[in-house]
Image (cartoon, rainbow, N blue to C red; front, side):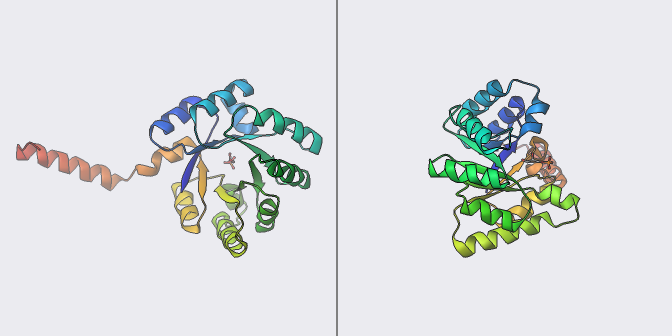
Amino acid sequence: MKFFVDSANIEEITKLKNLGLADGVTTNPSLILKAGRNFQSIAKDICELIEGPVSLEVSSSSIDQMRAEAEKLRVISENVVVKLPMTWNGLKVCRDLANSGIKVNMTLCFTANQAILAAKAGAEFVSPFVGRLDDTKIDGVGLIKEIRTIYDNYSFRTKILAASIRSLEHIKNCAIAGAEAVTAPPAILRELVSHPLTDKGLEIFLSDWEKSNQKI
Ligand code: G3P
């Protein structure tokens, strides 16, 4: 499973890269607003820092404007993935970009039917929003399972990038469901290694070794 950092905060991304947890990065207009920096500058910094795919989202919804923005995003770096909204216009632009060899991440996906459309449009990634579905009492991980089954049924190439991740449980269950990747906030990714019994067990091991007066 690939771990992507869902953030535009360069310091946070750097820390996670140093932990080996930044196979890629995803951003969106809300994360850019939260980062509080110039978009072009932060996009360049992230693309220089991260070797893997960096999703940068368009800020418009018309075909012509998304096409124009996609061109501006594409030239920032070779590892840019253009993020487009799950709309008929977004799918049309996705098809055009995919046919030109430009990678697309279709975002704001909430149904299996939308994911089918993303795959048929040649998207590199589809981003089902697990947490936001859960917020509406719909099983977000269940959607990942549905998409996995459908994509396997038809050998679709599009990768499932589970998004809107709110917990370690989401990460585990998306992995069990077969998502190729998950994009999560830095705070959740940092918790992946944690368990109180691990901490307690290590503390006892080190204490007992100290008592043994041994040297390795
Ligand atoms: O990548 C999408 C993600 O940033 C959305 O997360 O928590 O706002 O639903 P959230």
